[in-house]
Image 1 (cartoon, helix red, strand yellow):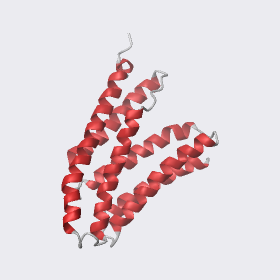
Image 2 (cartoon, helix red, strand yellow):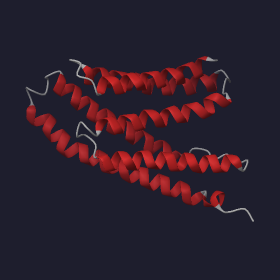
Image 3 (cartoon, rainbow, N blue to C red):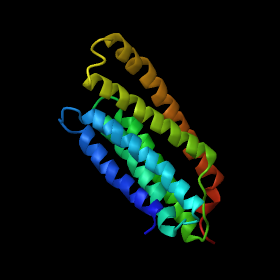
Image 4 (cartoon, one colour):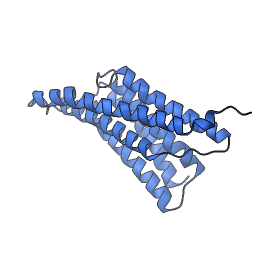
Amino acid sequence: MNWANRLTLSRLGLTILFVLALNSEWEFGRTTALILFIIAGVTDFFDGEIARRYCSVTNFGKLMDPLVDKIMIAAAFISLVPLKAIPAWVATVVVARDFLITGLRLVASSKGQVLPAERLGKHKTSWQIVTVIFFLVLLAAIELRYAAIETVWWLRAWEIGGPALVWITVLLTLYSGLGYAWRHRAVLATDE
């Protein structure tokens, strides 16, 4: 197993630790979750960079890297629901879109076709990560009691910035998913 694939698998482990930390009663659980999520995001950058730079792209990496990314994002959105950061319907939209696109890619694969990721999908993922980090930073700030000094600051950020980021994320998630499905609708055509 090469280093890129090891980093991909480490991101899966970091995601598990992230979920445990965010949903724990640890004194600094949310701060720990923020740090783990950022580290996992950094490994996502480096595994791809290593694979391309050293020509060590593998079938395992092609499959597992996007799958682990989806697991990480889904885990983050689902874990933020009970903390009242993300509404359940938003987490459902994010997870459902990824399942549907993965399903479309599997159908294409069974027909010998490869459906590549598109730039809009990468922008969508970036906004999802920004949204998750936004809420994790606020939760960590509250936990670290920095927000106690400026209660108005984090409350305004949560009430104004949070919904704005959530709507941008939802709209990009839906637009990129529907557009991708529409552009590749021929894959779903029945065989005659």
